[in-house]
Length: 421
Ligand SMILES: *[C@@H]1O[C@H](CO)[C@@H](O)[C@H](O)[C@H]1NC(C)=O
Ligand SMILES: *[C@@H]1O[C@H](CO)[C@@H](O)[C@H](O)[C@H]1NC(C)=O
Image (cartoon, rainbow, N blue to C red):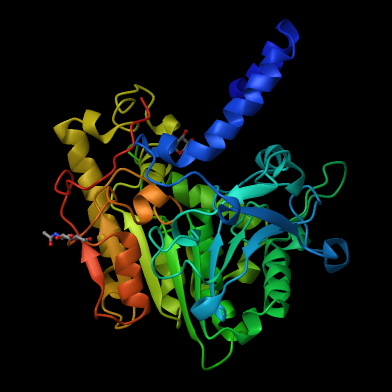
């Protein structure tokens, strides 16, 4: 991380202004093509035009409300108004970006876009589930579309009581940020929504699950309200060295940011608060219809839950954790065990009548936010349907039940498998 951050300033010291100018151009090119770069596929989407780029809105009166990012700056979101048949329908997407579990990791984060609006891009491209083009986003393109920026480091569920005293100033206001952004969107028309879908990816997928019923309750009784968690089903699994790394990490996040107050009462009454931060527990208490999109070989979970670097001192997993094609038969067997644990953790959920699933055997992470994975000719599919089509079928009850689970790797030829080597 620090290497990447330092590189441009070293260049600046050596060279003249040509470097910054070309950096700006490179950055713009990256912005335009980041979707295709990320996925190593030729661009499928037309060049962005104004409706694709959406300005950042900072929360009003954030100081008075006490709703602050880790560094004390105002939280923000990007909002594109719906029109026509979509004018009273809302799709929200909560940004992801991991968590911080210590004063030092939260202090570091407070100096980045994931902890401070001072560092956030002023405009973002709306892609995937937020795309304004019917060809890329057939069911939600003309809905009110909102991207909520993540800047608290605890899936919008921290509380100020545990903020550090003394010289380090850090704000743990996740729950307040969530509530204040909701209030502002409710005033902007969300309070009279006829249809709504709360979604999010990764840490934002977990936030979606944590806040799903609160969201339901804030909307009109007669509205169709559903939730979609993408790559947010984090498992309480042992890593390859036999340690419960993820459990101790979540334990630290929950302790540090006073998260227990945002967790379900029934769960906290019976279990350790940090157990109640795992989706397998969160989902037991959700009453609103939920859809889970999750790759069975989620690279974030493989790299952080199953094979964190410290669990692999001999580096025998070095290549496999970066590229599923480089895994040995033994390693694949362990990955398949992880896939089995994911499906087992979803067992009870699969029996719910209004829940939906899309579990594809790809080595990828977020799939709803990228045009190439959400809905394009080269998207991952199950039963010949893209994620967008499958979620549309579920949301609008076009068929039931909607539970798509493919076989073990490498059974699905439509998979996009990331290669980090
Ligand atoms: C496993 O966990 C223990 C206790 O937290 C720790 O001391 C040890 O270093 C960990 N080992 C690995 C390989 O992560
Ligand atoms: C798969 O779906 C596409 C449309 O998305 C259709 O053109 C094609 O015929 C379908 N293929 C099969 C095998 O059903």
